Image (cartoon, rainbow, N blue to C red; front, side, top):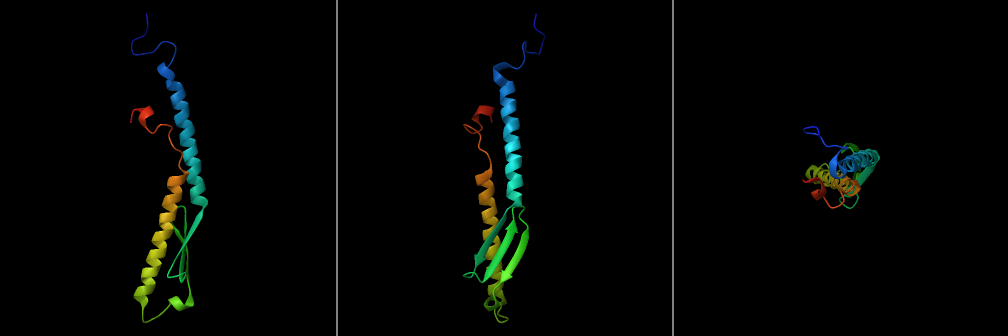
Length: 113
């Protein structure tokens, strides 16, 4: 007589194998995240007049301004170029993050999600 609520002989339908796959994928995702965080992304605006470097952790590391970009009579343009460069660098981080994450075979359908 089988125990109530249990499965004789272990998990049915390769559930143990599915758990191993999930653990492997989690390890791959953690490694991909670690690699991303160690990278730096640089973007420019204003034809290179402003350069911004951010980390994979989305932290601004450097801002480099060309001398000709600093015009006391047009601070607003400099501000706009800095914002544009920061946003582009952050977009690069997002793109690298999406590209570096492992994919589930067949999507989430195999997990019932």
